[in-house]
Image (cartoon, rainbow, N blue to C red; front, side, top):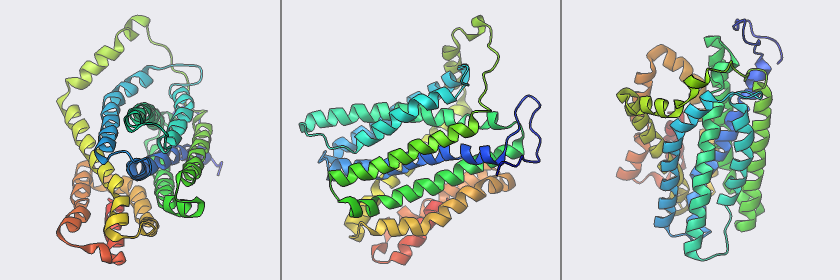
Length: 346
């Protein structure tokens, strides 16, 4: 595993090993364990266990995503300009990871307070969680160029992140109903379940940091005059670049659609299918399709181009919701698995 790769790194960069690429990919596991669990279950927990009104839960969730949209570009700009003896990006991961893990646990805690206070508290926790999670995500993914100057090797870095992230994320999502059945479908069971995933996410990020430690190096400092006012100038560039704004808007729509689907999946199986545990069966059955999609995406993009693959994925992702709207496939587990496989792959 520690064998050096044949492709050449820049003379200015340390040689990247397979072991480092593999370990770096566990950061994707951290992000996706947390993301897939909270995106799939946090609204469900709020409404069905913490008894938060559905409308209020939706508002809380939407507020968090708005703050994410605002802080995402700012986080990228600030982290790109950061320069410490611990590196450019790793210090952010060292700070945000424990914060995200703790807040992730608190999101699935039923506080014994009034309904109004509960909504306010969940709002604060979720907004702070989203801000830290976005900073964690941005700085983790920004490490890719520092892992290697060789473009071919970077593809392996991205693939490691995607495959491990997809595998761990979907597995965590599928295991939640199983763990709740084992530990108890109550507040204690949720605490144990979320505690397990929080600990796993934290350990995965520690492993990832060990893989990137040699490569996230301090950069030569710029002149202080050049650094002054960089945030304002960089934000101005972002806000005045029309193609970039369109890309951000389209990507935001994709993420929003994905999160709406993720948040409603458990409701579909509990109330439409009538079997909450079947969500685990379908999730595990479709996991190979999700991993295949993550593995094959770099090759498909290289062959057909990003735009064509993006359009194809968008069209294919409409199949499941359209069939849900026009037909009644909830009595057939086979049909559900096929529909979810299409969704997971694309």
